[in-house]
View 1 (tube, rainbow, N blue to C red):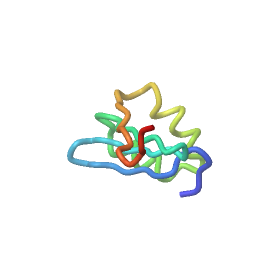
View 2 (cartoon, rainbow, N blue to C red):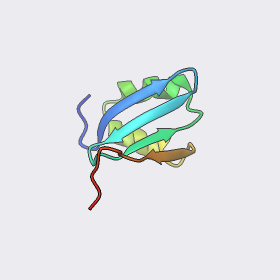
View 3 (cartoon, rainbow, N blue to C red):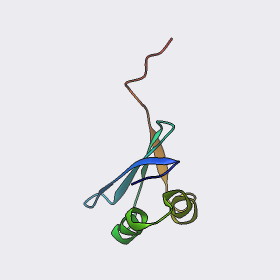
View 4 (tube, rainbow, N blue to C red):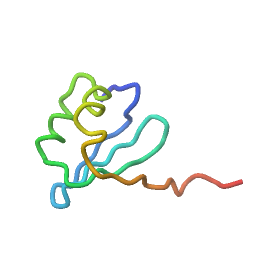
Length: 72
């Protein structure tokens, strides 16, 4: 899954949650995402373009804190 912006994509079909990790290390959960949208995302030639057009600003989301980061 080569992408300059997106590191990993996951999906929970039961919860209809899309999990996206960006190359920046930030993790997000997008809610009520149809399975077909996830499949399209996985198959997209440009993950970043697909995300910007079909995911971002189209679904509620929350950022998942990275608990592995050390605070100063």
